Image (tube, rainbow, N blue to C red; front, side, top):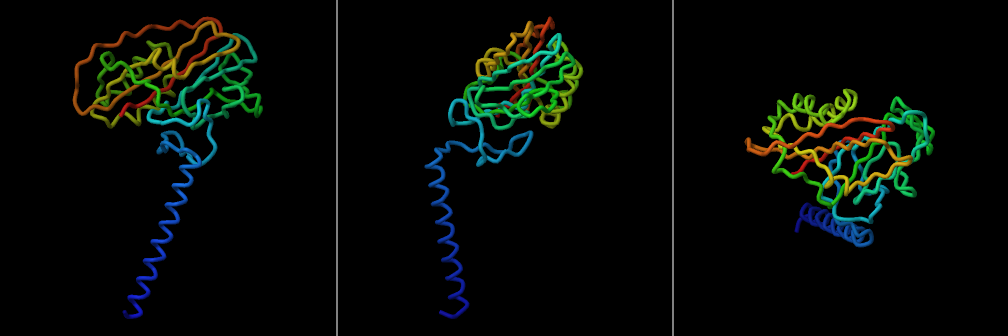
Length: 251
């Protein structure tokens, strides 16, 4: 064996040993932390899955993402408000920070919608969170809307006000969701109800006089299909109003 061959063998051996050691560390990490599934490619921000996260129900299998639920508070006068989010899954992003001790946020809310988070004394426009869950929150796709990808913006701009969102709210909704949906040939869209609120229950103190939670579930389609149109129920704001919007894509 010539010297060059010896060097190649040595290098290959080192690589094999290093790879085996790394594999051993990964297996050990998985065993110690009971990691069941890795969260990858969050839409809003990169989440380091080795960093601390909030697990209200323990670490569970993750296969569906609730994307950018935004909670707006509109009291009739300045008031202290507690927002408890009982989410059956893992919260992977939040702003302001979700407090696991109270399962939510403790804020001062104002009639124009802005809030002051008591934990950091900072001002926010709304409460934002994202989560991963194994609970079924897919919509009833036997009812909904089939929309060309290029027409999704116009569809949302016409439909969201009928659901009860204001221009400020539905504009923020469209700015987030339209870029993710526009390049699909078609989008099958359903607005979820109890199947979403059962997974992400909200308890707000003082109790709102009116509460609207718009959660869009959609699936990309290669061709148009026929579905029964979903009934759109109007929402009337009275007194202390709470509004939330969010969504998820079903793969």
